[in-house]
Amino acid sequence: GAVVSQHPSRVICKSGTSVKIECRSLDFQATTMFWYRQFPKQSLMLMATSNEGSKATYEQGVEKDKFLINHASLTLSTLTVTSAHPEDSSFYICSARDGGGGQFFGPGTRLTVL
Amino acid sequence: KQEVTQIPAALSVPEGENLVLNCSFTDSAIYNLQWFRQDPGKGLTSLLLIQSSQREQTSGRLNASLDKSSGRSTLYIAASQPGDSATYLCAVRETSGSRLTFGEGTQLTVNP
Image (cartoon, rainbow over all chains, first blue to last red; front, side, top):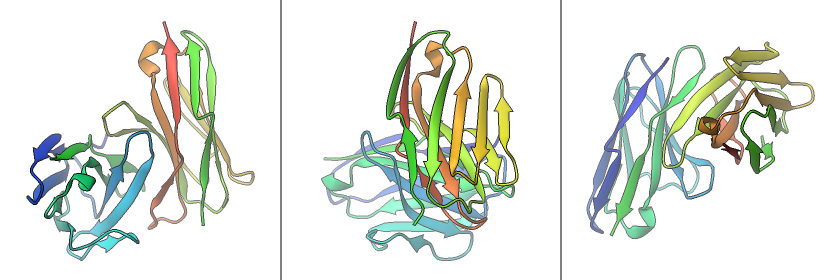
C-alpha cells in the first residue's frame, strides 16, 4: 500500500527556535499533501493544503508566516514551525493523496516546545 | 458545511465479539468515504476506501458499507482481537479535490 513517512518522529526544542518536519510519499507521487494538527483526545485539524510547485492554502486561523509549508517535489513537503512557543506543542501529521483519490497519512511528529 | 459524527465515542468488548462502528454525515453528496485506524501517539492507517458509487468494501475481518442516501457508513469488525484496540476514524471527501472531513472517532478496546 501507499506509504508516507515523516521525520523526525519526535522533537523537543526551546522556545523561539524553528523546527522543520519532513513528509515524504515513498512509493507514489502526491500532487497534494496536507498538514494536520492533533491535540490530545481530539480529531485531526487541517492546517493547510499544498500542491506541488504552488503556494499552500491555509485554513482559517492558521498563521502562514508561522507555519511555513514547502511542497518542492511530488514526493516531499516540509512544514517549518517558526519561532516555536509552548502553545505550538502538538502532534503534527502529514498526509498525501494519490491519483486514485485515497489519502494516506504519515506516522506523525510529536513536537514539544519548552 | 459537512459534519461527520461517529457513534459510539467509546466501545469496550470482549475478545471474539463481532462489532459495528457507525459513522453519519450530513451532506450525502460525497465523493468517497475512508475509514482509518489510529493507535495512541501514531499516525493514521487507512483501512478501507469506499467510492461514492460503491456500497461496500472488505478487507480481511473488516467490512465497510456506505449508504449515501441516508448519510451513513458502518465498519463491521468480525471476531475482534485485542490487537484491534485503537481509535477508528471515518472521513468523507465531498469532491475529488476537496479536503477530508473527519469524525471525532470511536475508541475501541477489545479485552482478552
